[in-house]
Length: 205
Image (cartoon, rainbow, N blue to C red):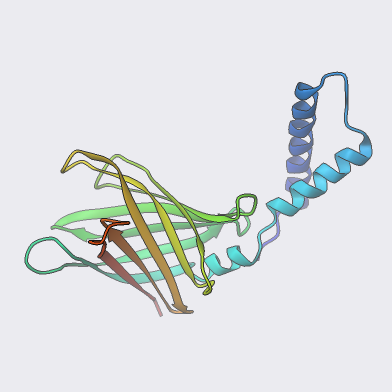
């Protein structure tokens, strides 16, 4: 994992110290933190900002990939699509940046998103946007007994039906170094919940 340049850490630490000082002074302008208190706050900030095991898990999905997507519930048979994806760890191993390209319904498809692990909240967080809409999707979640299975939930809008804040669920499964998948579920939380889409990723040689 690449380590940030020492000068960059100095700048970040100085900025964090200034922000914490302003926060404390805003709460009580008469009381300023002691050097010892400032040191403890800095140590806490460094600890919470450091990439950990969950970020290492995300890094397993970094690389160049081909993918096969299957969408269910559209027409009489599943709709299928092939494409390519490129993912890389950014900000010194803190976030996974994802980009994909393909063809959907005879139209060019492009999408991009990020996935990270928030040490403070103890949860994975993902954003996604693509050229099939103007919305930004945001989901969050955790792992269960298997740290290689990440379940994310959130809300999405359905412009075709006018529905807003529809529950959505994504399940990422890291199978091995060369394979992982993402499943999307519809009618989440109801007896009719079903897998609406699955994308299988295979690492390029």
